[in-house]
Length: 326
Ligand SMILES: Nc1ncnc2c1ncn2[C@@H]1O[C@H](COP(=O)(O)OP(=O)(O)OP(=O)(O)O)[C@@H](O)[C@H]1O
Ligand SMILES: [Mg+2]
Image (cartoon, rainbow, N blue to C red):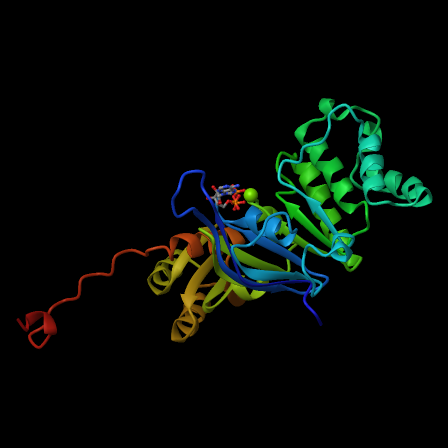
């Protein structure tokens, strides 16, 4: 299957007004996005997410490298008809009402009148703006602007939708509506490429994720592959008595909540030892499964490096030990 989005060595250096090296905003990005997926790009402020979207939309030129949408140049007019875009903090002319705004954009897309009359009310309903569509945009809250912006991004029934911080400024119920809408679009076979800082929010709805930092791609892959740590197992149990809990603390990392406990242990003999301690101390084993990190934990680990555990205990020096060899 041909990727919907493909980049090869995509690089952007913004020229600064003063002479100088410029700002390296995106550094050698190579990735592919398959059709029908929700693909998320995450990264700290200034890591190059919006720059990537602008390059993919053909709004700015790369310094080097290339991008393809549907196998074609992003600036190709036939590509433009197939994509929708919600920019970060969209700006719309405030004296129009929501309905008029969508009419205006429908005109730009040259949508036939019959299509407009059907699609605009449908989209207004889809983004939950039926009650406010005749209200002028300058009276809209941030979340309402975001919703009407989403309707605008979907006007031409695009196959590929770019969303830059789609839930920014939107309340929790609104954010959930937007997530449901993203899944609804994916179920219709559309491809969604989004950037977001709300990692806990997007974790459940994305298929693949790319982590950017200072313009560099640190990781990209299927969310399940990246979040599951196969070398660490989580053993869950109930009813383990205090003596057993104390022993478990020496084998792995124990967290307890009332009756239930969770022990994180490296895959290997420690797992059997853990299970035996649970059995021998009145415990009931519930499950043994690979540890699953949250997207936030993965993000922090990638950007900051792995958490430093407690300092290792000093080794006892022995007669033959290397410590004694001076
Ligand atoms: N037009 C521009 N001129 C000069 N530098 C720019 C321009 N646009 C962005 N930059 C710089 O490029 C880098 C990447 O910016 P970008 O907006 O792509 O980051 P981002 O990941 O979208 O950040 P955020 O999470 O804050 O939205 C930053 O250092 C930014 O200052
Ligand atoms: Mg941005």
